[in-house]
Length: 247
Ligand SMILES: [Fe+2]
Image 1 (cartoon, rainbow, N blue to C red):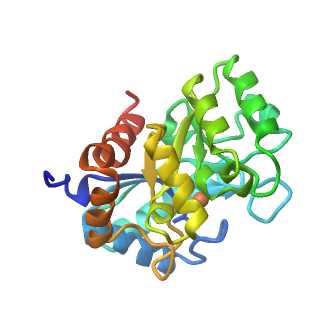
Image 2: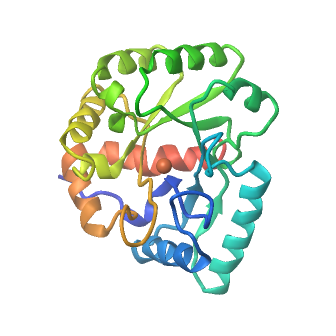
C-alpha cells in the first residue's frame, strides 16, 4: 500500500469546538484543549459546526455563532495555536428548515453553497429526503451528517445511497463510526456507504479533547488500511479543501 498523505493535510468539516453553544466544549479553555488535539497532528483548518436544533438550548443564531467563532479564533491565536476556524453549523432537519434557509438564518459550510444537515435519530428518512429533493429544485445543496449513525437509515442504507447517486446530496461519515466507536451497526452502515462509493467527506464530529476527539496519527493509519489511501485523501483532504476554497 502506498503511504497516505499525512494527517496534517486533513480539513475537518464537522467539529464542535465553539464553547457554550451545544454539547461540545463549555469554556474557551476546553476549546483550546480540543484545538491542541488538532495542532498535535498538524491539522490547520476546521469548520465549526455547532448544533442548531430549534426549540432546544442548542439553537444559537448565526450572529451568535459568528461572534463566538471570532472570540475563539482570537483566543487560539493568543495561545499560539495555528488553527483556522471556518463558519458553519450542523442543522437538525426540521419542518421550518425552508423558511430559515430563505431568511438566511442557517450558516452554510465555510461560506460555500452547502449546508450540513443532521437527520433525525428516530424518524424515518422519507420526509428528509423528500425535503432535500424539493429544496434542491430551488438551488439548495446539502451534505448529510453521519447517516451511518442514524438507526432508521441503518435499516435502509440502500435507499439513501440510491437517492444520493441520483441527486446532488453529498454524504459525510464520521471517522469514529468506521473505527467502531459508535458500535457495530454504525460501522457496518458506514462501510456499506463506502463499498457503494457513496461517500464525499470523512470528518471527526469532534466534541472535546477527552472523548470524541479529532483523529490521532494511529487512527489515520488504521483508516488508510480500512478504506484505502485514495478514498481517505479524497474524503478528508481534497473534497474538504475544495469546499473551503469555493471550488
Ligand atoms: Fe456533530
